[in-house]
Image 1 (cartoon, one colour):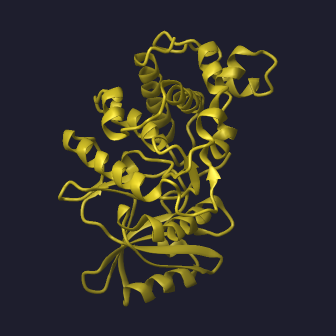
Image 2 (image 1 turned 30 degrees about the vertical axis):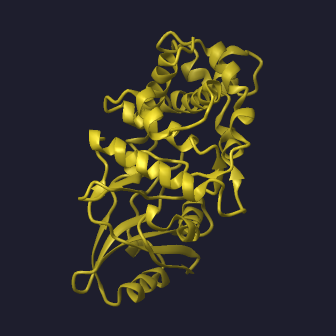
Length: 314
């Protein structure tokens, strides 16, 4: 079983990585404050250098997904610009990718507040303007990238499905809110039809721990780790269950933030796919080193299914 070591410390990285950070900050690294949140085994630390300069460092081995995510985020900085913290510099050193960012004032969102809805709406409008269609061409449809995580509902209703064994731990659980696995499987079957044609560059993982709130209330997105395209509303479908967990009406929030032209079935299809992954994986055993992962997945799955029921799916 994999044991995730998050957070890693910068001092655990190859010496060439540490030296690159020293070059960027122009002095000795006096203190490191590793991020306590997150679900990938990479360095993610605030670094305090000589004087008062503070930066945020992401680093990981180039041979694994954590390192590739660091590289993707750095490469995307040219098109993301001020939607995220400014990139100061990045490099490949000692078989690792390392990126150094401006440290923003403020902190990751712990609880959504009423004023955040207007800020999220502004952020969504800016992303539609800049990223739809995608300003870069070397991308993959989100529909394809997420596809290996689909199949929960079909596996539950079809005894001969090859993924049947992946849902044995939830087979006797009742799907909540009056929803039926058969209906959800029918929706999920339209996944590629609903999502593959979208051309907007996606963040792909917008939730509170990837959103920074500055003292002014402005919101910025961190951890751009995907080269995915999808309809411009798709990122906000992913976010809304996280808002619902803090008491916001999901449909009102989506209509306010997304301002989308998505038809009802397209949104339902995406919700069914997302819910299946969270509901299935959230009821698996805890992952050593990531005790917060399964509770987060269960909550996201529950909020997503509740929103589907609110939208009239049965």
